[in-house]
Length: 374
Image (cartoon, rainbow, N blue to C red; front, side):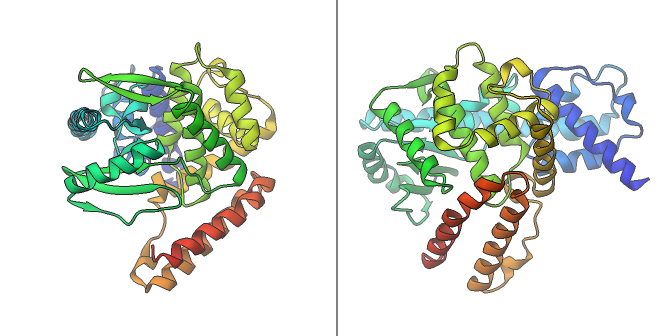
């Protein structure tokens, strides 16, 4: 009975995810006795409480108990307030930087949130700014005096994190993946297209123009970020939902030839098709909106295995055992490396060639991280 209830809760969770993403009708009566506490657990694990709350608006056959509705709506309203505050902070920060002659693009996060029907109910994270080499140097000098705290800079990757006015701000002078040289070369080309070719779009945030990556480059970058976490710790449905909403929103204007060239040069078409099958089979995305989709049984099988890992690991691997963090540093690093190698072994049945290809970079980056004391 407990197993069946868990199965029903997971199926209802995915049904509500689909409703939140696409506005599809939900019939609660098909799922028996609903365990709303388990539903909240799943939504929290995947950072999708707001999306589930949006999905509940499309239940047509019954009323949810008031206490259960309020638990979701209450959290969704908190997310909404945090989004409003973050958007105001971004508008202010970008304005101050532009006044100082510093120009940056916003990547991930609030830019992609605008692709949702309810952007204000998407769980927000950090403020990620992508800058040219010159602007990266200028931004460090300009922002560090404002920061209440900051992390050690990743010099080779050109990455620096800091906290300003209570918000985590991350500066990226390069969109680094740590997967393979082919992926890094394509991200370098993306950077050239952005800062030398001027390929970008924008979002009007409180009368402040905020620049974003072009749709093709954003779709590619977001996907590499999904893979980065998939291979190195754990990925949640929130990031995959972001990718789906981005592709769906710009389905009629995206340059598919450019996108395909990027994916193939990076050697990621196999992953793209497998995650595309997941988007169709589990998240309800329309076939017409998913570029390069194939309904082959091979991709459906891979999608099933990916989905099992996503539900097991949770958003950024939050479901995974972290008790090893109590041990000394070297023990923690050995445990972390062992987990990554174990994940690669698991992923090898899904992506055998790429798991082998990505292994050297992941090990080398792990050793570098240990040497730096991270």
